[in-house]
Image 1 (spheres, rainbow, N blue to C red):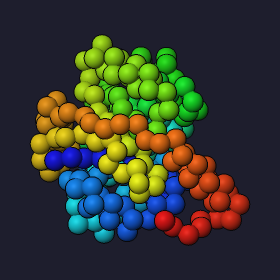
Image 2: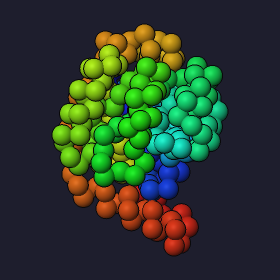
Image 3: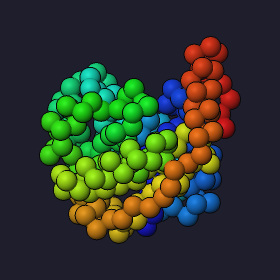
Image 4: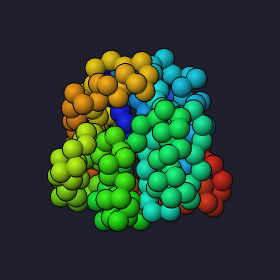
Amino acid sequence: MRVELHCHTLVSKDSLMSYDAIIRRVQERGLGALAITDHNKIDGAFELARRAPFPVIIGEEIRTREGEIIGYFLSEWIPPGLTPEETIARIRGQGGLVNIPHPFDSLRHSVIKRDALHRIAEQVDMIEVLNARVIMQGENRQAEQFAKQIGKVAVAGSDAHIPFEIGIATIEIEPFTDAASFRENLSRATWHGHIGPVWTHVFSLGATWRKKLAGTPRQI
């Protein structure tokens, strides 16, 4: 089954994407499952899981003191501002899995700091080696090389903030029912996809400013 591992809803500060729009796009793309990874929030993932006719992995893209880490198969919210080690411990405490998104993106302030990345490398389950929003393609290749060096599973994610982006970068994995079966099948998973168009970033910037100036505006 094809799975999208990196997607945001209107709950994220930089996205206006509604639950209905996500559901439609997942079905149009023929995806088997979707992970919702809102920034420092988890309620959007629970709401989509309640509505969606397909499996939704409850995730969170957590801003630690030294950059972002994604947790999957969560049951409780994890606050931002913890150390990377504390954040991973809380993910593990829920039986979740750990992914490092866009680890070498030089244009993103939220990227995990290099010292922290090397410090926690052995504690993670996977490395995002294709993020469809990383503009410099060499930085995705650098992530792929790093994953090989440390012997971690390479995965892809669209980092979708608008419906168009969902499914641009995915993994193919054998069917799973929970975190344990996902973890078991992960070593045999393959990643696929491509970089998305640069214009998609305009929507994120626009959503951020519209929310700052006028609160949560109309969904898309």
